[in-house]
Image: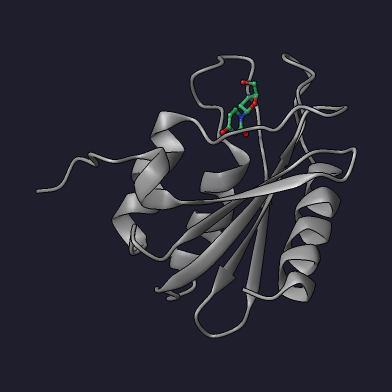
Length: 132
Ligand code: THU
């Protein structure tokens, strides 16, 4: 994937982070999902007073796309927290990625607020996804 596309996804994820609703953890996360059709679906984490209804930024983006009939994805950028730390997706979000993406080719781009990023293949983050 070219650097321009990676940077575009990171900037969309950083923008979505601005919409994070996270009054309980104060941990803001944004994600941007690139679909095979070229469209980008963004998402933020959305918390709840009852805690368990909380939705991660990654799943917000996936559910927006899938609920609009879109399948087949190429990459997702994630920006979470502040400073230099990267924010890897939680196990639940990895399992959702595994449902809709090819683990051999889907790229997970982790970017810090400081501007650094690292690119992983889904297969390396979730080597043994549950499948029926
Ligand atoms: N969170 C995400 O949005 N994505 C992840 O992959 C990890 C965690 C959110 C959930 C919750 O709102 C906050 O970060 C703290 O766990």
